[in-house]
Image 1 (cartoon, one colour):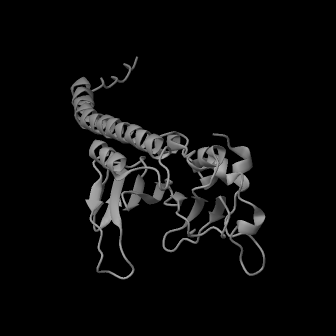
Image 2 (cartoon, rainbow, N blue to C red):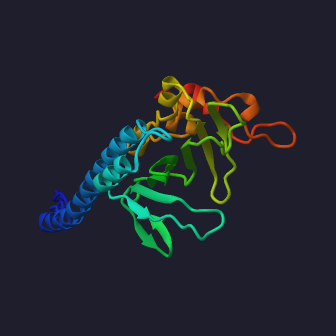
Length: 251
């Protein structure tokens, strides 16, 4: 009677070594992602606080002292007025908060699976008071598609809005990488409700999963006021940006 063939015993030592090697690789990678995400969440919270303070500012009423206090709290950068330039350049306070990133070949990169975003604000001061405020939020999707949302508090002379319009929602052209841009301009006479809609930036788009796909999510309240005549159109009358996904997404 033939004896049964011997079964090879599993190489327990080899399995143990493989497990230890995998652990040695996964643990530092996991710690790197946890640290990265903790920094990103902290910066997202700073962005939320900054927007919360900026939404209370008013053209011609907010003093430079108040702006300087904000700058001291959030690490703003001051640029003095330049009287000799034409046109005149007023004093400016600039703010920026961004997701963690590294520069590779002149391009900002994040860890695989994370997204790149930045919040930027520029406040101009003339005669001791706020004369113009520009707040911009940039969020890049995982496919590199960019979402830009901009809120502008303008002075007596509007920048994009028709003369006399207090609250103006519009799409902007984007040059370079693919993306969408939605803007809101407020005059000093804008109502509190209009200001509330304009500053309703959805900052959960900075860190949430699933990611935000369109500007209807990054600036949801103002997007509802984007009338057809203010949308970007091709020569054949078709809209430049496709928002069909927006009807199926909620904040």
